[in-house]
Image (cartoon, rainbow, N blue to C red):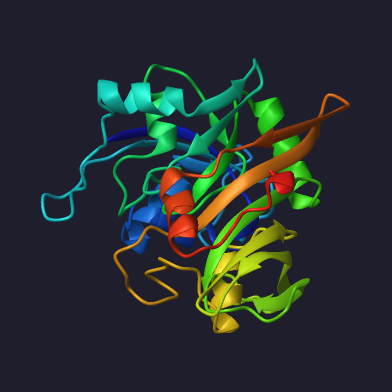
Length: 296
């Protein structure tokens, strides 16, 4: 298998060892093989050779130039988009110019490939010899706005804004139970993959509608930790409906939708909004939860 890709290190993998990053994002290679490909500069960081123990820094650029064979037992299929996959993803694009794309990602599709994912946004977009760069993430089951850079300059520029918390992202979620507080701020500890306990997760929230059984909540994401919103409300005993990891396993989609993204680009304020998915609206109607139209 040939892998020729560049990756930008985001908050999720800050302070993560490069060997662990390789296992999580490329393949679960034996440690001896990882050390070998690093030694031979098949994988470099900022175009420099690093040791397996190197801790990644925010906005580091990882260059992968690999050609390897997988054993039959551990072989993973390479996802090849169908014509329908390509057509569908381009229908989801809300805006694009020469620098970036904004699309409304459906629930159930991953942002990028991994050991447990097949269909994913980046492989579809890159299929026709294009080159796109991830600047932030959405969980596979989370729907909504995804910002993707078309060149390295834009990728670095937007990634810096994310790291400095200058990009505003708002979500809608349906919680299980009647959340008591009308609005507030949630600050919680975040342990990253290297168990760095100095990090925190911050979210602001406002209740839009609620009853005894469910709550519709508006969330302004201040930090961007992995599964942040899902973990925070699970810890408060109000899990997001349809969350099969942090809540009860139910035959429902994850009721978490990224509906606004706001950032500055070329000295201009950019604001993009995503329509709420039909299944989300149908559940609100079914449970008599109303959306104040002035917020959308």
